[in-house]
Image 1 (cartoon, rainbow, N blue to C red):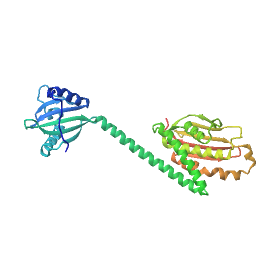
Image 2: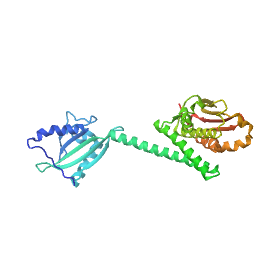
Image 3: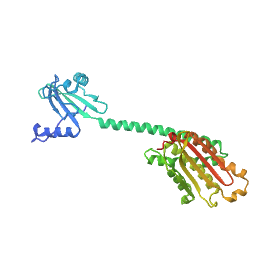
Image 4: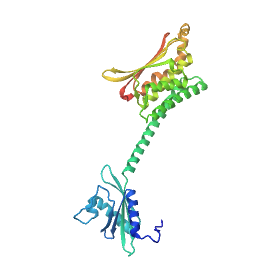
Length: 336
C-alpha cells in the first residue's frame, strides 16, 4: 500500500498551501471536485470547459455531467466507498474528447468520509496512442510486403542460378538493391520514391562517378512504396547486366531511361523505357551466345516486377540495343 502523507514547513498553514495545490492541478490540466459522503459538492476547481456549473442550481453530478456520466460516476463512488480502493474511469465526452475520472474516498479530520474526484484530460494522449497504433499496423503491413518481395526474389534467383556462388552473389545484389530503395521510401516518410532518385541511387551504388553514362528523360514522378521497390529492382537487374557485359561503355552513346504518363483505354498509365546501346564489338559475336547470359534476370524483369505493379513488360536484345519497357496503371503506382 502506498503511504499518503503531507510534509510542509511549520510556518506554513493550509491557507498558504492551497494556491500551490490549485496551481499544480491546473498546470497538469486536471480538475478537482470535493464532495461529502452524500455526494453534495463542497469545492470545484478547474472544471473542463465542456461542462458548466449552473448559476441557478446547486452543483451535482447530474446537472454538470448529464444523466449517463452521472450514473457512471455514482456507481464508481459506491464501489470506492465499499472497497476503500480508488476507482478510475475513462469517459468519452464526444468523438474528440476523452477524460479520466479518478475517485478517491478519504476521511477528513472530523472522521467524516469525503470524496475527491480528479478529472484529467487524456484527449491528446489517446490521440497519440491511436496514431502510434496506426503506425505500428502500417509498419507490420509494409514489413510483410517486404518479406513477400524477398521471398519472391529468393525463389526466382534459386530457379535460374547454376551454382551456389552465383546464387549468393545474385541474391546479395538484389537484397542490397531493395535496401537502397527502402532507404528512399523511409526517408520520404513512407510516401514512396521518385523515379529518377531510384535510378541515380542504383547507378551510384554500382558505377560511382558514372552518372554521365546514364540519361534520364521525361516525368520524374513520385511512386508508391511498392512500385518504388520493384522499379528499383528492375533498374538493378538492367544495370548489372550492362556493367557485366560493358556493351554501352564503348558504344559512343548513353543509356537512356524515359518516364512518361500515357493513356491506355481511357486510363492513365506510367511507361518506363530503358534503351541501352550495344557495343559494336559485340555485334561480331554470335548473338545466340550473348542472349542466354544476358537474360538471366528475365524472370525478375518480365514476371516479378510487372506482376507486382499490375503491369506489362517487354524485354528485348538486338545487335543494336537492349530495350526494357514497363507499363503499369496509375492506381498501382499511386503517383499524382
